[in-house]
Image 1: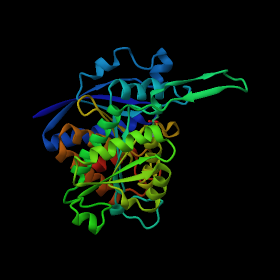
Image 2: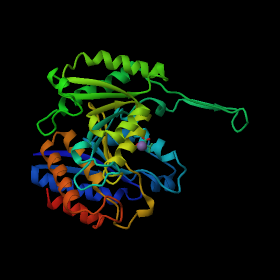
Image 3: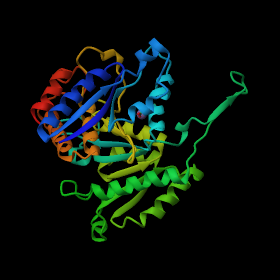
Image 4: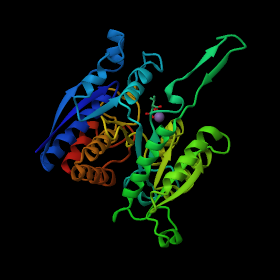
Length: 368
Ligand code: IPM
Ligand code: MN
Protein backbone atom coordinates (compact mmCIF):
# COMPACT_ATOMS: atom_id res chain seq x y z
CA UNK A 1 0.00 0.00 0.00
CA UNK A 2 1.00 3.57 -0.45
CA UNK A 3 2.93 5.54 2.10
CA UNK A 4 3.00 9.33 2.05
CA UNK A 5 5.62 11.46 3.75
CA UNK A 6 3.91 14.43 5.38
CA UNK A 7 5.71 17.44 6.82
CA UNK A 8 3.58 18.77 9.67
CA UNK A 9 3.95 22.38 10.81
CA UNK A 10 1.46 22.81 13.67
CA UNK A 11 2.61 26.41 14.22
CA UNK A 12 1.21 28.79 16.79
CA UNK A 13 -1.80 29.29 19.02
CA UNK A 14 -4.57 26.83 18.27
CA UNK A 15 -2.61 25.45 15.30
CA UNK A 16 -1.35 22.37 17.21
CA UNK A 17 -4.86 21.59 18.53
CA UNK A 18 -6.54 21.62 15.12
CA UNK A 19 -3.64 19.79 13.50
CA UNK A 20 -3.92 17.00 16.08
CA UNK A 21 -7.53 16.43 14.97
CA UNK A 22 -6.58 16.56 11.29
CA UNK A 23 -3.92 13.92 11.93
CA UNK A 24 -6.41 11.77 13.83
CA UNK A 25 -8.74 11.84 10.82
CA UNK A 26 -5.84 11.26 8.41
CA UNK A 27 -4.77 8.14 10.32
CA UNK A 28 -8.32 6.79 10.45
CA UNK A 29 -8.77 7.40 6.72
CA UNK A 30 -5.48 5.62 6.06
CA UNK A 31 -6.63 2.52 7.95
CA UNK A 32 -9.94 2.48 6.15
CA UNK A 33 -8.67 3.19 2.63
CA UNK A 34 -5.38 1.35 2.73
CA UNK A 35 -2.60 3.92 2.84
CA UNK A 36 -0.24 5.13 5.50
CA UNK A 37 1.40 8.42 6.32
CA UNK A 38 4.79 9.06 7.82
CA UNK A 39 4.82 12.39 9.64
CA UNK A 40 7.71 14.58 10.50
CA UNK A 41 6.96 17.52 12.79
CA UNK A 42 8.62 20.93 12.46
CA UNK A 43 8.33 23.50 15.26
CA UNK A 44 8.64 26.61 13.08
CA UNK A 45 6.47 29.49 14.20
CA UNK A 46 6.20 32.29 16.74
CA UNK A 47 7.55 30.42 19.77
CA UNK A 48 10.55 29.17 17.82
CA UNK A 49 11.19 32.70 16.54
CA UNK A 50 11.01 34.25 20.03
CA UNK A 51 13.43 31.62 21.35
CA UNK A 52 15.94 31.64 18.51
CA UNK A 53 15.39 34.77 16.40
CA UNK A 54 14.98 32.54 13.38
CA UNK A 55 11.81 32.42 11.29
CA UNK A 56 12.82 29.54 9.03
CA UNK A 57 16.18 27.74 8.93
CA UNK A 58 18.24 28.38 5.81
CA UNK A 59 17.63 24.85 4.58
CA UNK A 60 13.87 24.81 5.25
CA UNK A 61 13.10 24.19 1.60
CA UNK A 62 15.53 21.24 1.43
CA UNK A 63 14.09 19.74 4.62
CA UNK A 64 10.51 20.02 3.40
CA UNK A 65 11.27 18.81 -0.09
CA UNK A 66 11.86 15.28 1.21
CA UNK A 67 8.09 15.06 1.73
CA UNK A 68 5.04 14.50 -0.44
CA UNK A 69 3.01 17.33 1.11
CA UNK A 70 3.00 19.86 3.92
CA UNK A 71 0.20 20.28 6.46
CA UNK A 72 0.27 23.63 8.25
CA UNK A 73 -1.71 24.70 11.34
CA UNK A 74 -1.44 28.45 11.87
CA UNK A 75 1.32 31.02 11.95
CA UNK A 76 0.93 34.15 14.10
CA UNK A 77 1.93 35.15 17.63
CA UNK A 78 0.69 38.09 19.75
CA UNK A 79 4.24 38.91 20.94
CA UNK A 80 5.74 39.12 17.45
CA UNK A 81 5.45 42.25 15.34
CA UNK A 82 2.89 41.79 12.53
CA UNK A 83 4.53 40.88 9.24
CA UNK A 84 7.58 39.07 10.63
CA UNK A 85 6.08 35.58 10.74
CA UNK A 86 3.67 36.14 7.86
CA UNK A 87 6.47 37.18 5.52
CA UNK A 88 9.22 35.12 7.12
CA UNK A 89 7.36 31.82 7.23
CA UNK A 90 4.03 31.58 5.43
CA UNK A 91 4.75 33.75 2.41
CA UNK A 92 8.36 32.60 2.25
CA UNK A 93 7.27 28.98 2.00
CA UNK A 94 4.65 29.80 -0.63
CA UNK A 95 7.23 31.65 -2.69
CA UNK A 96 10.25 29.40 -2.18
CA UNK A 97 8.21 26.30 -2.98
CA UNK A 98 6.63 28.16 -5.92
CA UNK A 99 3.14 27.26 -4.76
CA UNK A 100 1.57 29.42 -7.41
CA UNK A 101 -2.03 28.37 -6.83
CA UNK A 102 -4.00 29.06 -3.71
CA UNK A 103 -7.07 26.88 -4.02
CA UNK A 104 -9.94 27.90 -1.76
CA UNK A 105 -13.20 25.98 -1.98
CA UNK A 106 -16.28 27.86 -0.85
CA UNK A 107 -18.82 25.32 0.25
CA UNK A 108 -21.75 25.66 2.61
CA UNK A 109 -22.05 22.39 4.51
CA UNK A 110 -25.47 21.21 5.72
CA UNK A 111 -26.52 22.71 9.03
CA UNK A 112 -23.94 25.50 8.81
CA UNK A 113 -25.24 28.99 9.38
CA UNK A 114 -24.66 31.52 6.62
CA UNK A 115 -25.24 35.26 7.00
CA UNK A 116 -26.73 35.23 3.48
CA UNK A 117 -30.52 35.26 3.44
CA UNK A 118 -32.28 32.19 2.03
CA UNK A 119 -29.16 30.44 0.77
CA UNK A 120 -28.82 26.68 1.05
CA UNK A 121 -25.86 24.34 0.61
CA UNK A 122 -26.66 23.86 -3.09
CA UNK A 123 -26.43 27.64 -3.60
CA UNK A 124 -22.92 28.05 -2.19
CA UNK A 125 -20.49 25.65 -3.78
CA UNK A 126 -17.71 27.19 -5.80
CA UNK A 127 -13.94 27.33 -5.85
CA UNK A 128 -11.65 30.33 -5.88
CA UNK A 129 -8.31 29.94 -7.64
CA UNK A 130 -6.16 32.65 -6.13
CA UNK A 131 -2.85 33.38 -7.87
CA UNK A 132 -0.30 32.85 -5.11
CA UNK A 133 3.11 33.88 -6.42
CA UNK A 134 2.86 37.41 -7.72
CA UNK A 135 1.08 40.73 -7.55
CA UNK A 136 1.80 43.10 -4.67
CA UNK A 137 2.79 40.13 -2.51
CA UNK A 138 6.24 39.99 -4.11
CA UNK A 139 7.17 42.87 -1.80
CA UNK A 140 8.78 45.12 -4.38
CA UNK A 141 8.64 48.82 -3.63
CA UNK A 142 9.91 51.21 -1.03
CA UNK A 143 9.57 54.37 1.01
CA UNK A 144 11.50 57.61 0.68
CA UNK A 145 11.58 60.66 3.00
CA UNK A 146 10.41 58.31 5.72
CA UNK A 147 8.40 59.93 8.53
CA UNK A 148 8.42 63.35 6.93
CA UNK A 149 5.36 65.09 5.52
CA UNK A 150 6.81 64.37 2.07
CA UNK A 151 7.04 60.61 2.53
CA UNK A 152 6.25 58.60 -0.57
CA UNK A 153 5.47 54.89 -0.49
CA UNK A 154 5.14 52.58 -3.40
CA UNK A 155 4.30 48.91 -3.57
CA UNK A 156 4.60 47.43 -7.01
CA UNK A 157 1.95 45.28 -8.52
CA UNK A 158 3.80 43.01 -10.91
CA UNK A 159 2.76 40.10 -13.10
CA UNK A 160 4.45 38.29 -15.93
CA UNK A 161 2.56 36.60 -18.75
CA UNK A 162 4.08 33.28 -17.68
CA UNK A 163 2.72 33.67 -14.14
CA UNK A 164 -0.71 34.61 -15.41
CA UNK A 165 -0.81 31.80 -17.98
CA UNK A 166 0.12 29.02 -15.56
CA UNK A 167 -2.54 30.16 -13.12
CA UNK A 168 -5.22 30.44 -15.80
CA UNK A 169 -4.32 27.02 -17.19
CA UNK A 170 -4.87 25.48 -13.76
CA UNK A 171 -8.20 27.29 -13.43
CA UNK A 172 -9.47 26.24 -16.85
CA UNK A 173 -8.51 22.62 -16.22
CA UNK A 174 -10.20 22.71 -12.83
CA UNK A 175 -13.35 24.18 -14.38
CA UNK A 176 -13.39 21.41 -16.98
CA UNK A 177 -13.17 18.78 -14.22
CA UNK A 178 -15.71 20.41 -11.90
CA UNK A 179 -18.65 19.25 -13.98
CA UNK A 180 -19.71 15.87 -12.59
CA UNK A 181 -22.92 14.00 -11.89
CA UNK A 182 -22.92 15.26 -8.31
CA UNK A 183 -22.04 18.75 -9.41
CA UNK A 184 -23.85 19.49 -12.66
CA UNK A 185 -23.98 22.84 -14.43
CA UNK A 186 -23.44 25.76 -12.11
CA UNK A 187 -24.30 29.30 -13.02
CA UNK A 188 -25.23 28.37 -16.58
CA UNK A 189 -28.42 29.29 -18.41
CA UNK A 190 -30.44 26.91 -20.58
CA UNK A 191 -28.93 28.55 -23.67
CA UNK A 192 -25.42 28.01 -22.29
CA UNK A 193 -26.17 24.32 -21.78
CA UNK A 194 -27.60 24.01 -25.30
CA UNK A 195 -24.46 25.66 -26.62
CA UNK A 196 -22.46 22.80 -25.08
CA UNK A 197 -21.05 24.49 -22.01
CA UNK A 198 -20.78 22.32 -18.91
CA UNK A 199 -19.00 24.60 -16.45
CA UNK A 200 -18.10 28.19 -15.88
CA UNK A 201 -14.93 30.14 -15.12
CA UNK A 202 -15.17 33.73 -13.90
CA UNK A 203 -12.18 36.04 -14.07
CA UNK A 204 -12.20 38.66 -11.33
CA UNK A 205 -10.19 41.85 -11.91
CA UNK A 206 -10.43 45.59 -12.28
CA UNK A 207 -9.92 46.14 -16.00
CA UNK A 208 -11.67 49.51 -15.93
CA UNK A 209 -8.93 51.10 -13.82
CA UNK A 210 -5.90 48.83 -13.49
CA UNK A 211 -5.54 48.53 -17.22
CA UNK A 212 -1.96 47.26 -17.47
CA UNK A 213 -2.04 44.32 -15.13
CA UNK A 214 -5.72 43.45 -15.48
CA UNK A 215 -5.46 43.98 -19.22
CA UNK A 216 -2.78 41.29 -19.28
CA UNK A 217 -5.01 38.93 -17.30
CA UNK A 218 -7.98 39.61 -19.57
CA UNK A 219 -6.07 39.07 -22.82
CA UNK A 220 -4.47 35.89 -21.51
CA UNK A 221 -7.86 34.66 -20.26
CA UNK A 222 -9.61 35.25 -23.57
CA UNK A 223 -6.78 33.68 -25.56
CA UNK A 224 -6.74 30.55 -23.41
CA UNK A 225 -10.54 30.17 -23.42
CA UNK A 226 -10.34 28.94 -27.01
CA UNK A 227 -8.69 25.72 -25.80
CA UNK A 228 -11.55 24.93 -23.41
CA UNK A 229 -14.75 24.85 -25.47
CA UNK A 230 -16.93 23.43 -22.66
CA UNK A 231 -15.97 26.16 -20.19
CA UNK A 232 -18.13 29.25 -20.37
CA UNK A 233 -16.08 32.31 -19.48
CA UNK A 234 -17.34 35.28 -17.52
CA UNK A 235 -15.74 38.42 -16.15
CA UNK A 236 -16.48 40.44 -13.02
CA UNK A 237 -14.85 43.55 -11.62
CA UNK A 238 -13.66 42.79 -8.11
CA UNK A 239 -15.93 45.31 -6.42
CA UNK A 240 -18.98 43.90 -8.19
CA UNK A 241 -17.80 40.37 -7.46
CA UNK A 242 -18.10 41.03 -3.72
CA UNK A 243 -21.71 42.09 -4.26
CA UNK A 244 -22.64 39.03 -6.30
CA UNK A 245 -20.86 36.65 -3.94
CA UNK A 246 -23.26 37.94 -1.29
CA UNK A 247 -26.40 38.29 -3.38
CA UNK A 248 -26.08 35.43 -5.89
CA UNK A 249 -23.37 32.96 -4.86
CA UNK A 250 -25.09 30.31 -7.02
CA UNK A 251 -23.79 32.17 -10.08
CA UNK A 252 -20.24 31.03 -9.37
CA UNK A 253 -18.55 27.77 -10.32
CA UNK A 254 -14.81 28.44 -10.56
CA UNK A 255 -13.41 31.93 -9.95
CA UNK A 256 -9.86 32.90 -10.87
CA UNK A 257 -8.11 36.05 -9.71
CA UNK A 258 -4.83 37.65 -8.80
CA UNK A 259 -3.21 37.42 -5.39
CA UNK A 260 -4.48 40.35 -3.29
CA UNK A 261 -7.96 40.36 -4.79
CA UNK A 262 -8.09 36.64 -4.09
CA UNK A 263 -6.99 37.20 -0.51
CA UNK A 264 -9.79 39.68 0.06
CA UNK A 265 -12.64 37.89 -1.69
CA UNK A 266 -11.84 34.56 -0.04
CA UNK A 267 -12.33 36.02 3.43
CA UNK A 268 -15.70 37.27 2.30
CA UNK A 269 -16.43 33.89 0.72
CA UNK A 270 -15.33 32.03 3.84
CA UNK A 271 -17.72 34.08 5.94
CA UNK A 272 -20.63 33.23 3.64
CA UNK A 273 -19.96 29.54 4.19
CA UNK A 274 -19.58 29.39 7.95
CA UNK A 275 -16.45 31.38 8.71
CA UNK A 276 -12.87 30.50 9.54
CA UNK A 277 -13.82 27.38 11.51
CA UNK A 278 -14.59 25.54 8.28
CA UNK A 279 -12.53 27.27 5.57
CA UNK A 280 -9.63 25.25 4.14
CA UNK A 281 -7.14 25.98 1.42
CA UNK A 282 -4.27 24.48 -0.52
CA UNK A 283 -1.10 26.24 -1.66
CA UNK A 284 -0.38 24.19 -4.74
CA UNK A 285 2.62 23.58 -6.86
CA UNK A 286 1.19 21.04 -9.31
CA UNK A 287 4.66 19.72 -10.16
CA UNK A 288 6.29 20.23 -6.78
CA UNK A 289 5.51 20.35 -3.09
CA UNK A 290 2.11 21.62 -1.95
CA UNK A 291 1.01 22.91 1.44
CA UNK A 292 -2.46 22.65 2.95
CA UNK A 293 -3.83 24.82 5.72
CA UNK A 294 -6.93 26.06 7.48
CA UNK A 295 -7.18 29.62 6.16
CA UNK A 296 -7.89 31.17 9.56
CA UNK A 297 -5.26 32.40 11.99
CA UNK A 298 -3.76 31.15 15.25
CA UNK A 299 -6.68 32.43 17.43
CA UNK A 300 -4.48 33.03 20.54
CA UNK A 301 -7.39 33.70 22.88
CA UNK A 302 -8.76 30.18 22.37
CA UNK A 303 -5.41 28.45 22.72
CA UNK A 304 -5.27 25.41 24.96
CA UNK A 305 -8.97 25.45 25.77
CA UNK A 306 -10.11 22.60 23.50
CA UNK A 307 -12.85 24.80 22.03
CA UNK A 308 -11.56 25.74 18.58
CA UNK A 309 -13.26 24.27 15.51
CA UNK A 310 -10.93 21.74 13.83
CA UNK A 311 -13.04 21.26 10.69
CA UNK A 312 -10.99 23.69 8.59
CA UNK A 313 -7.82 21.74 9.41
CA UNK A 314 -9.61 18.45 8.79
CA UNK A 315 -10.80 19.86 5.45
CA UNK A 316 -7.22 20.84 4.64
CA UNK A 317 -6.14 17.24 5.29
CA UNK A 318 -8.90 16.05 2.95
CA UNK A 319 -7.72 18.46 0.26
CA UNK A 320 -4.20 17.11 0.75
CA UNK A 321 -5.39 13.53 0.25
CA UNK A 322 -7.31 14.52 -2.86
CA UNK A 323 -4.20 16.19 -4.23
CA UNK A 324 -2.07 13.13 -3.42
CA UNK A 325 -4.52 10.99 -5.39
CA UNK A 326 -6.44 9.43 -2.48
CA UNK A 327 -9.72 10.64 -3.94
CA UNK A 328 -11.96 8.13 -2.19
CA UNK A 329 -10.54 8.91 1.23
CA UNK A 330 -10.85 12.64 0.57
CA UNK A 331 -14.49 12.28 -0.50
CA UNK A 332 -15.25 10.13 2.55
CA UNK A 333 -13.84 12.77 4.92
CA UNK A 334 -15.88 15.39 3.13
CA UNK A 335 -19.06 13.33 3.53
CA UNK A 336 -18.30 12.73 7.18
CA UNK A 337 -17.75 16.45 7.78
CA UNK A 338 -21.09 17.15 6.08
CA UNK A 339 -22.76 14.58 8.32
CA UNK A 340 -21.22 16.08 11.44
CA UNK A 341 -22.16 19.68 10.56
CA UNK A 342 -25.64 18.59 9.51
CA UNK A 343 -26.43 16.40 12.48
CA UNK A 344 -24.17 17.23 15.40
CA UNK A 345 -22.60 20.67 15.71
CA UNK A 346 -24.69 23.53 17.08
CA UNK A 347 -22.45 26.22 15.61
CA UNK A 348 -19.14 26.54 13.77
CA UNK A 349 -17.88 29.15 16.24
CA UNK A 350 -15.20 28.36 18.80
CA UNK A 351 -16.74 27.51 22.15
CA UNK A 352 -20.27 27.21 20.79
CA UNK A 353 -20.06 23.97 18.82
CA UNK A 354 -21.71 21.89 21.56
CA UNK A 355 -18.61 19.70 21.41
CA UNK A 356 -14.95 20.17 22.20
CA UNK A 357 -12.19 20.29 19.58
CA UNK A 358 -11.20 16.68 20.25
CA UNK A 359 -14.83 15.51 20.24
CA UNK A 360 -15.38 17.05 16.81
CA UNK A 361 -12.33 15.14 15.54
CA UNK A 362 -13.76 11.96 17.06
CA UNK A 363 -17.14 12.55 15.40
CA UNK A 364 -15.51 12.90 11.96
CA UNK A 365 -13.58 9.67 12.56
CA UNK A 366 -16.70 7.78 13.74
CA UNK A 367 -18.64 8.77 10.66
CA UNK A 368 -15.96 8.07 8.08
C1 IPM B 1 -4.12 34.19 3.91
C2 IPM B 1 -3.54 35.17 4.89
C3 IPM B 1 -2.13 35.53 4.43
C4 IPM B 1 -2.23 36.17 3.07
C5 IPM B 1 -1.36 36.41 5.41
C6 IPM B 1 -1.34 35.85 6.81
C7 IPM B 1 0.05 36.68 4.94
O1 IPM B 1 -4.35 36.29 5.00
O2 IPM B 1 -3.60 33.07 3.81
O3 IPM B 1 -5.11 34.51 3.25
O4 IPM B 1 -2.41 37.39 2.97
O5 IPM B 1 -2.13 35.46 2.08
MN1 MN C 1 -6.18 36.19 3.86
